[in-house]
Image 1 (cartoon, rainbow, N blue to C red):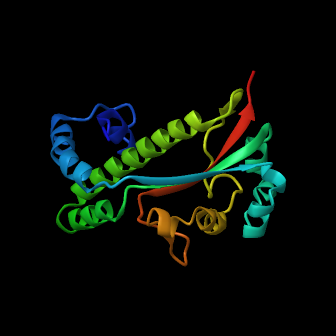
Image 2: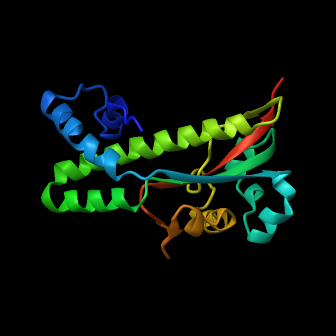
Amino acid sequence: MTLDTREICRYLSLGRREPDEALLARIEALRPEAIEAIRPRSAWTRFDDWAANPTLLAAGLRLAESKTLSLHLKDCHAVYLICGTLGPRFDALARRAAVSSSADALILQAIGAAGIEELMDGAGEAIRAELREGEALVPRYSPGFGDFPLEAQRPLLGLLDTSRAIGVSLTDSLLMVPSKSVSAVIGVKACF
C-alpha cells in the first residue's frame, strides 16, 4: 500500500491550498505506523442477471428497488458485491491517536480514507481481471448513495459472509466495524 500524499491531502479537505511543510512532515511521520497497522482484506462475488437473481432476492438484496442504483446499472447484465477493510489494527491506531492529538487523529482518518480507496481500487482491478471477454465494469456504488439504503449493507455483507471471510460486521446502527471498511455493488456491462 502506497498511501499517496496527494490523496491524503485531498481527504484533509485542503481544497486548492497546498499543504505546508509541518503538515507534510506529520503525514510522513504517521505514514509508516499507519502502513504497519493496515491489514487489507477484501471479498467479492459475482451475480449474473442481477435484477432477478434468486440468491440476491432470497437474501433481501433487491437492487432494482433503488432507482438511482437501477439507473447506474441500467446496461449491466451482472453485478459484483464487494467489501474491503483496512482491519481492526488501523482502528486501534486511530483511537490511540485521538486520545493524544486531535491533529494526528484527523491525519490518520485521511490516511485511512486514502488507504481504503486504494484497497478498493486494487480489488476493482482484480475483478477486472476476472471479466469475460467483451465485459467492462461500471464504477462501484455503495449503500447510502442516492436512494440505495444503508440497510442494504446487511444482506450485502451476509451474502459475502464478511464477518467470517474478512472480519467486517455491522452495528445495530449500520456502522461498519472496522470503521475503515467499504461495501459496494459494481456493475458488469457488455462492451464492444
